[in-house]
Amino acid sequence: MAYSVQPKASHFVDGAWREDTAGAVLPVIYPATGETLATLHEATPAVIDAALDSAARAQAEWAALSGRERGRVLIEAARLIRARNRDLSVLETYDTGKPLQETLVADASSAADALEYFGGLAGSLTGEHIQLGADWVYTIREPLGVCVGIGAWNYPTQIACWKTAPALACGNAMVFKPSETTPLCALYIAEILIEAGAPAGLMNVIQGRGTVGASLVTDPRVAKVSLTGSVPTGKRVYAAAAAEMKHVTMELGGKSPLIIFDDADLDNAVGGAILGNFYSSGQICSNGTRVFVQKGIKDAFLTRLSERLQDAVIGDPQDEATSFGPMVSQNQLDIVMGYLEKGQAEGARLVAGGARLNRPGYWLTPAVFADVTDDMSIAREEIFGPVMSVLDFDDEAEVIARANATEFGLSAGVFTRDLARAHRVIAQMQAGSCFINSYNDAPVEAPFGGVKASGVGRENSKAAIAHYSQLKSVYVRMGDVEAPF
Image: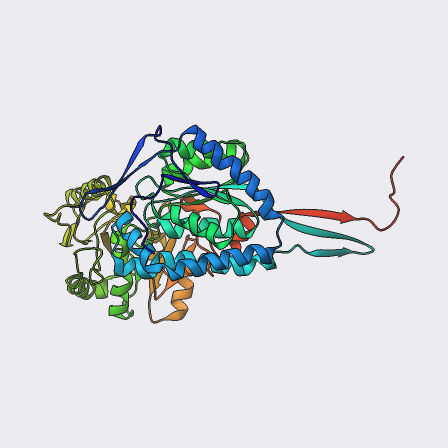
């Protein structure tokens, strides 16, 4: 079945499509052409109330099921997503502008992986027995209640499921607000969950800009907030949630280092730098956008990189031959163009790309700056676009200190044939998700998240369970109670 770019309604609430045209208009713009493909509306207070009330009702019903029963629904949803991968990928490409070549393997399929993985874990979520002589303690792992997920625009399908799958496995309900820039895909995930057997209201999707998200974060019916977004947005949401003592997961931005030593396999290192800077047109939070190249191979690296960039196919994102797509919006394109100007003004050398293409849509060729220094804006600030900064270094101690000299701490990578050095360097990186001779792999089995300003908590893996559940401990005394009076 095909999924329409103009959905039946703006929201999916209590198991059904729901519209309220009193909400502000949200246009859905195709980044490849700048055309408006659909028109949605922001959630009104009535829609928000309906979503939260139905989530609270569904959560009680869902939590009463066994873990295996919950897991069965998530695994069936994963099966349905895989069966419809192409249709969902086409929709994701319209939503984000990412090439179909990419969305076919990285978006809906990743969402299915999350639902399948946490569906498999659901039946294993138990407490423990702690013997204390004749007495004993047992623990119960309990759901938190209603969770709110706030998504980013770069991976709308994946992010919806990275948050929803562990939440549901633990017995929670989810109210998900996609980015207003990419509002389509999560709606169909909610519909698929109903088809898979989830109770109405278990996953609700409502649209809106920041004010809708803010109303969700501070609502007393909400127990947990999970955000994927920028550091400034994360700080605001974290503060608002903390004021209400809510649980939080913050998956925020980065300015991650990718360190390439002179003994690295050159083509592998170039490939890692391409994946860490230009996949999804550079719009990935974990990207290794500070590429530290040891001076002995700097020229060879830049030469090989420039050669391989010539192989990028920039064209219709719905054509599977296309390997590089547009920026997601005019606003994001303007931000990136501003950094290209700053880089050149501050003395960096533009060695490749950075050209605005003369065609409809938000197109820019992948850009590489060389001779970048640590104090330049392009080396300090998250750009979130196809802009690579190449920095020189001499030795290991120097590059470790420079790589860590940032407020961010999401990811880090190292390319070297010396595995002892690889482990030694990674052990000293102040980052949560790291890579050796690779970059940007994110299997659901592995924890994902940052340190420092890049966030708190972890998504994916068994670690996510701790962020969507809480422990109750019960002390059982087997003998008499002794009291002082």
